[in-house]
Image (cartoon, helix red, strand yellow):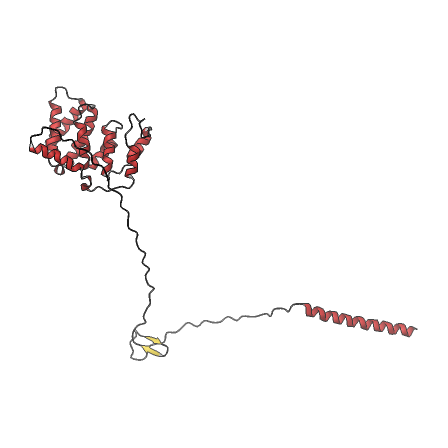
Length: 278
């Protein structure tokens, strides 16, 4: 009986070994194969060596394979891509000329010619190098019609806002003259800036200023403003005014000094500028 027990234990041990061996083989088959380890060796890059030309050949040639060409190698530059330029949009130069009212009863042909020159300037304000500014029409629309006491229909009742708008006007654009003359000579604003801007505009400003110096219903102070600007323009551009200084501005200065008690401001301007313009 002891022999049978030992025999059974031996069989059980062998059976366990077989089962373990089979299980081990099964587990080995189920595991994924390991990736092979690859060792990369650095490769030395050989710099290309220019092959010399054949003996006696031109050094400016080049090799095509094993054949030598005496001409230099052609270079193929990429074609230039031309971008069409958009045409510049010019600002409009449209404007409505001021109406020049020539006094009736003029018999002196030189005086009449001077007034006709005023009308000619009014209809050709661009002949003195003016440059249209695209923003000018918008600024004019904000400033005109000029307010009466800064409470008019234009809506800009604030004095500071008005000065900012006037300061934004381009003195190279003669269409702004009417606005500046209306505000400065009409008494809406004062100061040296509007005056200097009008003087800078030169000849095209003359047709807008002359009516103010001849308006006897206006304040002498306001007439004096226009007179001062006209006299300064006359000094700078006398030749371009063709008789306007001699036959319109100077007679007005003489008429002021001929008064028994001329206004202080007009009299001051007349005494200052008459000797310089005669």
